[in-house]
Amino acid sequence: MENITILHIETATDVCSVALSKGSEIIGVKEEAGGNNHAKNLLPFVDEVLQQGGCKIADLNGVAVSIGPGSYTGLRIGVSTAKGIAYTAGIPVMAISTLEGIAQGAKALWAKSSDEQPQIIPMIDARRMEVFTSRYDFNMKPLEEVSAKIIDENTFAELLSEQKVLFCGNGMPKCRELLSTFPNACFIDAPVSAKNMLPTALRKWQNNDFENLAYFEPFYLKEYVAAKPVVKGLH
Image (cartoon, rainbow, N blue to C red; front, side, top):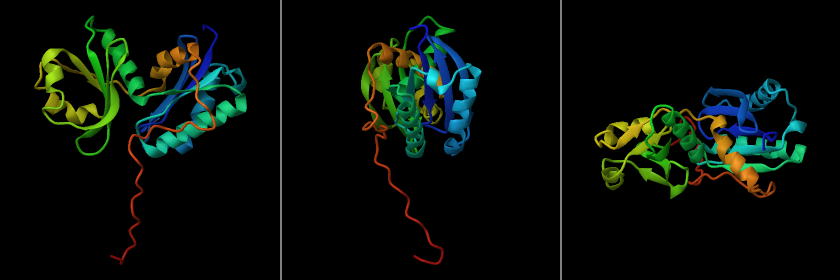
């Protein structure tokens, strides 16, 4: 495993992030929170992290890509790029839940300052008080299916009355005021980053848990609905 080289791609949110790993070490990272610049930035970021790691596409053993939930357009760009690289190089693709990647990043940050092991609830901002979310124990065992939830003061009341929970992700800040009334609610700013995909990618590599390049698609959770065009002067 120490020589396995994996390219990691994360484009599910407004962050365009690419990382390169060798074994259990990250050897290159390039990322930017730029909103709608994924199509322009992704391939140059791939080139840059390969240069950082002294690698070429031919040196890769696999590609890990964040598959959602998240931005429809961002996910399409990330998955299409991962498929293209994997097909060209003849290497496998590992699909990583965006929420699991966020939870991995939060776990790593939390562990630097605390010995407690709370459950982890990552949140991706949807609209208004809605988030895409799931729940993990501190060993990253999934405890809930991914779902869309409207957050109010009662959403996690029962869980928070029983144990400590760590909330994270870009959907967390808008929910913080409602949830901070519970003593067991903890919050951490864990930026979305491709480097947080590494633990899951290595596990999938060991288990030969690879995607079918011809058929796998991003996990949108909700159907994409295009906005109706507005023509000035017409009603």
